[in-house]
Amino acid sequence: MIVTYFTAFAPHWQRKRQLRHASKRLLAHAYEALESFHRTSAHFLPQAINLRAAVLMMRSIIKEMDKFPIYELDDQGSHSTARRLVAVSTTLEGACLLLDDMASRLGSDQMTEDDRNFMRGWIGERLEAVTAILAGRPLQRPDPSDFIGGEFRP
Image 1 (tube, helix red, strand yellow):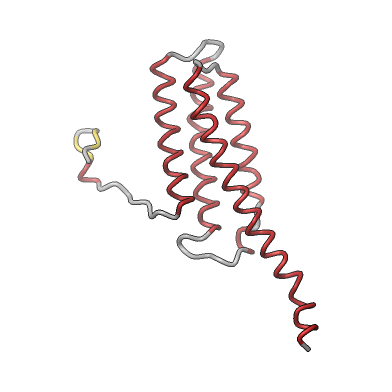
Image 2 (spheres, rainbow, N blue to C red):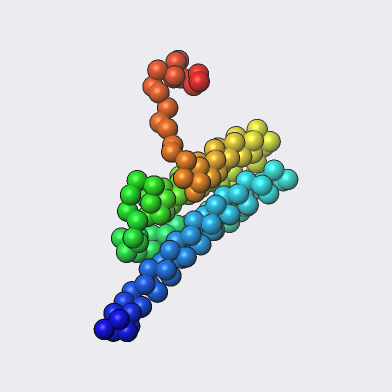
């Protein structure tokens, strides 16, 4: 009886373990894509092709995350791997939107230092958010009263 039980559920357990490992790999790839672009963009003034290459890399990870069967994962709570996958995928998509817009505005020109610093700051904030998501730290929404006259005052 015990052998039958283990024989019947071994493939199911194996699939769950494979899904957990695959989800962790996807999250690591997403972090690495943001971190790599953020780190390397400090050393040069990007052109549109550099931004499009970063977008291509991020979108390939987003596509893999979108295909991932998140509802087959065991944990479905508020800090679950499934929610982390969705949150990180959405964060990457936001970064892609910014980089796409900047690439279309650049045309064949090189980015200015001010634009690069703005872009790196924005990507850095997304990187911090992804780091917090992966670490399991709760994210807090900003208090609307902190926004006075279009400025954020913590």
